[in-house]
Image (cartoon, rainbow, N blue to C red; front, side, top):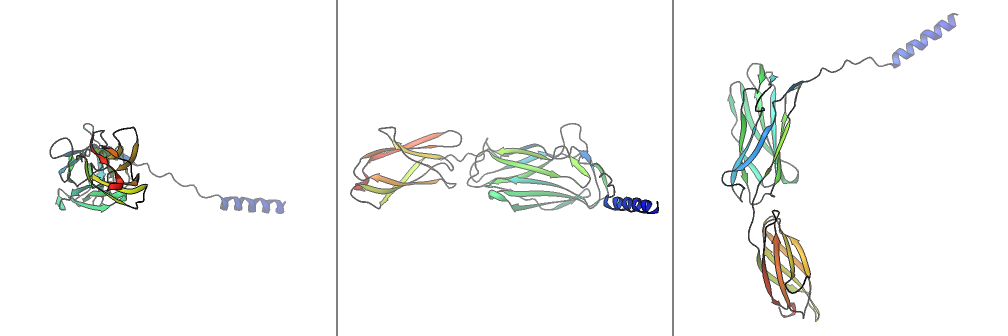
Length: 272
């Protein structure tokens, strides 16, 4: 009987040691609708950004109605991060301190040529309940460079303080950019020739990112399709008949479907 009791006690002790203690459920996070709302990016003039122009990135931190703030304790911070597409930068305001907040901005490079701009609101005053419920929006001056891919996405992300979650943590829009420039043929150079063939490079300029097609004006033959670079330049290199006389149509089509063209010829590559 004693042996049975000892075995039972030992088995129970082993089972107890092998069973991890119960873990209390983490306290649920409180929810605020302070975050990112109504994101827009607009040029200073017109409907589209043009090369080397400025505009404004704007968004509100609360919804139009029914704002529900959050509690921010002294030493805690709220952070908004805007990811600007390649070709777009921001003018960073100086650090300011007001109404118990220190507000600072920073920028750092990201993948694919993008830039992440952060706005940090550090609470330096007393603990503040219902923070953000009476605030308006955030605006930032943005600067378009020589080229921004048209309708590139721009996103904003909000990070609340510990213990809180936002029902609207992200927002996005697209950047309207018009880089249109007329197609132009810059020149043709030849090399690697023999009696029957010639290798030629055709160069020109077009709208950055546009598709450039080189074809015959006399038939449906399409000789080459290339893409204009971010600086608008394009090149096409291929082998041509040395003795044939070509009449070329060169046409560009940009991301909005606009097009124009130029012609070249008659052109006999072997006589270049």
